[in-house]
Length: 324
Image (cartoon, rainbow, N blue to C red):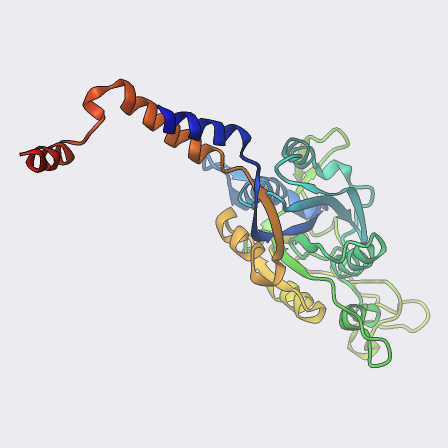
């Protein structure tokens, strides 16, 4: 009884003890352009779900799997512009707010219809630096579908943006580009202004080639006329009305930006990619260990009040032999 009382008192007054560990801080940016509405994933019930719904579900699952002390910020992007919904917050204390925010992310929040992935990545890196979030890992969720396709002549130099040059070197922003969607081409749902699906995009609904600026090599363009038709007089055809995850393109972006790449398949594999050693940060977190002396105190109380449990049978036999 005395030992139980001492242990119970220790459990009451015992302070939280500091223990070293790891944490992971992220700024999660989600593509909300129209191709993210393609339903090429399966939900928990086996029904098809959109890429955006898959991203939201796996974001929540991976946040649950992170150690307390980790921080997560949420943002969205459409066209070339990323927008922060709020800066990183502690995942255990503020999980309810994170869950509500993620659940409410919707493609109808998009303010522009285009999808310029490379420029969005460039602006996201600049946003991280502007907001002094360099200690956070940028998670960039996208299917990689450029709409319209980007003109190679005007591509940003992601390597220089990240690493600088010999005169002005830079510390790169850590990042993980997460490709979403199946590798097979799928139709892109079309919705009306009230959010009701009215069919799918056709080849006539979307541009199949860029018409921005000057072509990189005019001689390769059929029907090229320098003044009146710099992108050719012929009708454009292609498969840009269909969508798949552009793995090779996203891997190329990741390589140029010095980032990691992961193709989203399930939350367990995503969590493994997110907790790579490159993204870990040390932390000393105070841990409540009062449950240990409290459990020992309870065990001693049980042994005190139930005679049959006071002494194991094997110990009782040893004691009887010694007394004899």
